[in-house]
Image (cartoon, rainbow, N blue to C red):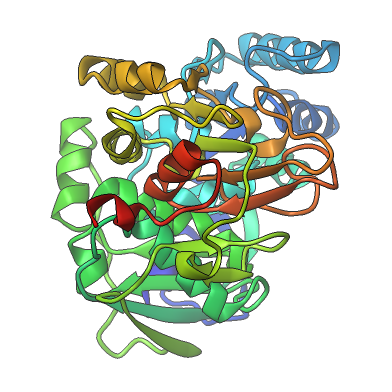
Length: 417
């Protein structure tokens, strides 16, 4: 069996599982946020009186923090009262950060476990060798009530990535290139298993970026075996008591892909689909009104560092709003300690509190009719950041920062030229 099949077999107390098989699996950890908790709570109350285990539920306020309208404030009140009633102590209500950053950062994620979240980018935790997937409010309510859920065992695609990433080419470019090849629905309900020397040498931030975006090609989950950087990250957070699960050498995969990144250009997903991917050389010169650095995809310290490196000594173009949103309070503090926030402020950027911010078009960076944004976020559908006549390009932090200086999409590799 491969790593995903092994995790699901153990969670279902089965010796082995096969792709397509329906199983009932024990969940190790469940997560919801301020946007998805109230519908989950509403359905839960039709199923049970008490949650199955309050210590295995984590709730994070991140989508509309601080509340941007009365509806958001009410959602947060409902969730806060439910957590108090049920004895859920793992609740983060004061802008601690984005759920997909907070859970690993606070040591909730363990390799070999089953993690579900009421958010589609829950697949991020596959970076730590966990089976992690998103689900809707009804399924999450069932998990809250029973600690279990049914899954169909996904068939797997093996994605091998080899080579050394060039300057200003990052994990974001790797996953955009993969999505461009597979297509936005090319891996629907598949498990994407990443391997190769590029993945083996990638830092935790990059691995989280890779796993985060597998949902953008329809995948059920993305997963990779923990490397030394991952094990060090877990050790630093005193995460223990887990098994390192690896795929068998004779594991069967529905399809296999091989990507070589030695000559990879920075990639951009162009409007209005994440699989509409082109190299920066084909998009350079496109006018922008807004640039965003942040999100559960690219709001980590490594992302802020590379953006600050590009911006240092420069000013944001007078017609561009550069919005920076650290993925967590701890990242914000670390960035302050390294002088990164100061660099952003001197360059003319707006620094927002940790959270999802403009990514979902809720607040702190909504686009109006005809505006164009280049962002380190994960989706660029019609109306994603505001007006349906606006456009969003997705790129790595270096591309976004360099483009903000010139008011148009530019290749950051020109900086050293």
